[in-house]
Each structure stands twice: as C-alpha cells, then as structure tokens.
Amino acid sequence: MGIRQGQNPTPRASSRTRDLVMTWVNKYRLTLGVGLAIASLVAGLLMPNPDPTTDRSQAGTRVPSLSFADLEGQPRRLEDFTGRVLILNFFASWCAPCHTEAPILESWLETNPNRVQVLGVALRDSKAKLRDFMTRYGLTFPVTMTTKEADLARAFNVVGIPRTVFISKEGRVVSQVIGPLTRQTLEARVVEAERAELPGR
Image (cartoon, rainbow, N blue to C red; front, side, top):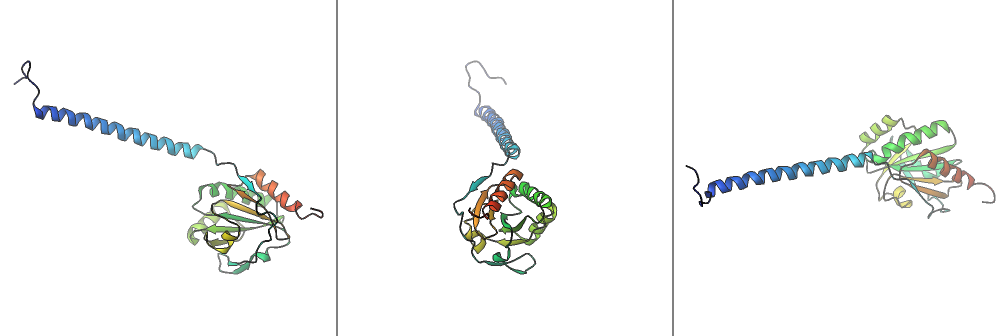
C-alpha cells in the first residue's frame, strides 16, 4: 500500500534509510582513512634519509679505557684499537637508516684498506638478527653488542642511531656524525681525524 499524500513515511522505512546512509558514510570514511595511511607510508618510503650532521662537542676528549666482548665472546679493550684512526659505528639491525649506511661503510673500507680501524657497536639487538645483518652486507669489521646504558654508548652520549664516532690514533675524539653516513661525509671525517694527528695541530 503506497503512502498517501500528506502522510509521513513509517518509522521502519525512515530507520532503514538512515542505516543505509550511515553504512555508506562509514565505508567512505574507512576508504579515505586507508588511502591516507597508504599515502603516508609511500611518502615515508620515498623520502630520502636526512643529511647527516657533524657534532664536535666532544672534540679533544680522550677515549676512556673500556672493556667489552665481541660477538664471539672474546674480550676486547678500546685501547687495543691504536695506531690508526678508529671509527666507532653505532647501529642496529632494526634501524632502517643503518641498512642504507652499512654497504656504504663496507664499500669505503674495501677501497681504503688498512687506512682505519672500525668497531661496530650494535644497540639493543639480538645475535641472530645481527649476524643476518652482517652477512647481508658482508661486514668485515668486528662488532660488539650493547645497550644505551652500557659503557660504550654512555661514554659517547649515544641516544640515537646511526651515530659514528671518529677517533684519532692518539685516542682522542675528533668528531661524531649523527645520521646515516654518506661516502663523502665518511671520507671528509676520516681526513679530519688523520689531520688531527699532524704536528702543530
């Protein structure tokens, strides 16, 4: 039976129409939300890593005497890394920018053999994931594991990664690079550390 002129729709019909409208509105909101989330994710993936910055606030500070163990459990001392510029690279397998940095560092080492020493310091990592990371990028330098509260990280005020500390062969901090290394930045900081050892400087 149709609705006569001047007669309002039944409450049931009105409720059904309202439910239908709300269903479409909710679907639209959900689709819009998913679309925005995907757009944000893509933008994050396409956005280049921020340029590294150089910090010299600890320049001239003598490196403390610290002991630690490498991944094989062998005891090591920081003062054992003498005679050449030492690079302390703080990283982790779960750190996205570190995946960009690792092959750059290893490639530079291959083309500059015996020029520097490198010690990798992994923060809050697991041995299994760390070994996978090292295998993936063919890392050849020794690595130790630590936490933000451990002596190595605390000694250099490391609160975020990647961070790389450049130390002269005399055992003094020259600079720190905050953010993922580029080949150009790596070369420049090594040269700076080498020149810091020259007489009269």
